[in-house]
Image (cartoon, rainbow, N blue to C red; front, top):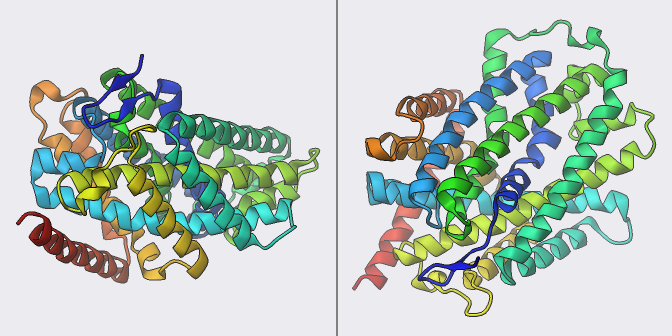
Amino acid sequence: MREREDNGLLRLLTLKDAVGVGLGAIIGAGIFVVTGVAAGVSGPAFIVGLLIAGIIATFNALSSAQLASIYPHSGGTYEYGYILINPNFGFSAGWMFLISKLSAAGVVAIGFGSYFHQLVPITSPIAFSVLAVVILTAANYFGIKKAGILNLVIVTITLLSLLYLVFSGIPEVNTENFKPFAPFGISGIAEAAALLFFAFTGYARIATLAEEVAEPKKTIPRAIIITIVTAILLYAAISIVAIGVIGAESIANSKSPLQLVANALTTPAINTIVTIGASTAMLGVLLSQILGISRVMLAMGRRNDLPPFFQTIHKQYRVPHIGVLITGAVILLLTVIGTFEFIVRSATFTILLYYSITNIAAIKQPKNERMYGRLIPVLGLIGCLVMSVSLPLNVIISGVGLLFAGFVIRFLFHRKYNR
């Protein structure tokens, strides 16, 4: 049944659609790139870091699920911060989400072009990147259900390609490649956990789209839990096979570790299938970025933290079409001219800030609204704070600078639109 919100959005996303959105946001650059970086700082023990990151991400995921089931509004943590803490916390979450995800989307679009060009070398990689942004922006524009169906197709292809890699690699696993297991000790494992945490954070996209999920109180917690468990199991399987086949050192020295694994295997068409999977993984992340960013713009437009035209809903397609188009335009610009490196660098800080606010909001929920008790968000908050300590000082400074710039822009918007 089509349930319409007063503002014109439709609750059309089922459990399957919501899980697809979450997996599409998670299974991207993290599994294809970050695993190599993590192996470089901890050796084979990055698998332990992966599990630690997964546990902390699960605490955060449960906090998001608890909040979204009670406050099923577009905007996710932006809304929770406003409602349960104060407007400054809410704005901080929303602004940092926009800055980090817009910049990351440009990187992902460029990554898609690079991978897809290997499959179809008929034009330049950047041309494929631009085409992907245009097509996915259009898919978002013509309705949430169409975007959800396209996302499910993309995610299915990605999952099948990764499972093919796992089952192809299992017979080739060499246990000697796991020795020495932890050459860089506990500190290496901790650093790997901090790196890998960011690979799990896409599940929050489900909460960001909460206003378009059918039966949100029941569907959102289930979708988030299914998404995070699936992602942990998939990442663990891929990591074990990758180390077992080529060793942690080889993974660490490659910018495309999974393709290196594929090169070491003799299964039919393994290289092509992994490249297809990498391409669709980038598409899935990009599609979910446009979905999430435009919904946060919608929420911020409603409160005049962005110009109020962002809250406009298309009469026919029932999507925040202005936010979708502007999101697509900004990503397109970043794809062509290149992203700002200091913004990409500060993404680690912004994500930790975002989830810290999520956990604080969950801690402040009234007792009758809590599904998992207060301990879960407390542990999630502690995990975020501990990981933030490991960040380089320049990353923290650039993140604080971006946040300050956001408050200046917000002040100007409020002065103009709240007269």
